[in-house]
Amino acid sequence: MAMEPDADEVVFDAPEYFRIYKSGRIDRVHRPRLPAGVDDGSGVASRDVVLHAGTGLSVRIFLPKLQEPRRKLPVLVFFHGGGFVVESAESATYHNYLSSLAAAAGVVAVSVDYRLAPEHPLPAAYDDCWAALRWAASAQDAWLAEHGDAARVFVAGDSAGGNIVHNVLVRAAAASGGDGPRIEGAILLHPFFCGNTAMEGEPEHAAARTAKVWAFACPDAVDGADDPRINPTGPRAPALEGLGCERMLVCAAEKDWLATRNRAYYDAVAASAWRGSAAWAETEGEGHVFFLDKPECDGAKELMDRVVAFIAGE
Image (cartoon, rainbow, N blue to C red; front, side, top):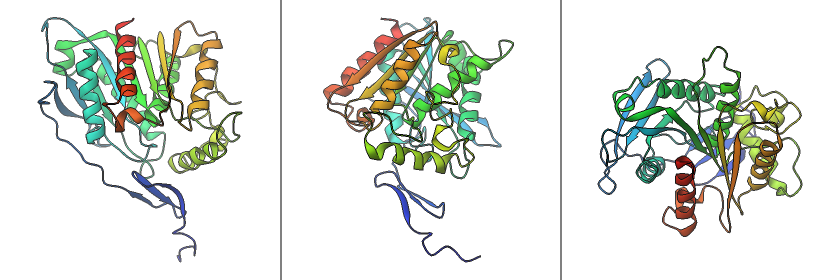
């Protein structure tokens, strides 16, 4: 079958990450990866665990240097960003961030290496992350069994990973018969949400830009970008009152094109009948996931302190 004459037309271009073509092809920019091991600076140890050989689902576990070996640490399950189409738990960006987070917050961190679209369209990533969360909460791994506190489980993620956090909370609420893990807290870092219609205050290009990525990652979406998995405040979205966690921290950046959506999500959760407590943190003068690219800047350090305080219950 002959290709369409405009099959090589670029429909989405994120030069440092990926390029999507009209044909459905994707070019991924090579991102440096790091092996698991011991971080010289922080003393955080990491190792990889395969959870499902058939699908390739795996996790990278981060164990901070133990000051009190007998004290159990909170367990934080992390979902990386990348528009559902790029990045991994092995990437230098996320390896370094999780090492820093584990050391600063004193948590056993579990970074999920979920399947990527378009080779594995959504809901593959949602299913993988739910499976990894249940695995982590069950403390089947030696590090988690010895050092993790299964009664203090947190979920966190940035961008597309923040979207996954929301969808995991929805699934946790729907789990019957105690099948879902108890989640103490959820941290959504610049979560990836969109909709068919731009919101008031949302940049004109933002809704269309995010909708293109969503359509590529989830071609079977119901109502396009108003699918409740990507538009949790849209007309088809389930009530937020049942979100399956006790506390939530929603983080945004002033210059992020997703900031309007992030605020709308926080406002909707806070105004709902959800019995948990929601907190908001916005960084002035910064853009989308700036803390990954500039971990040493003041804003990134302040955000890390905010996340650490949230986990500690402060």
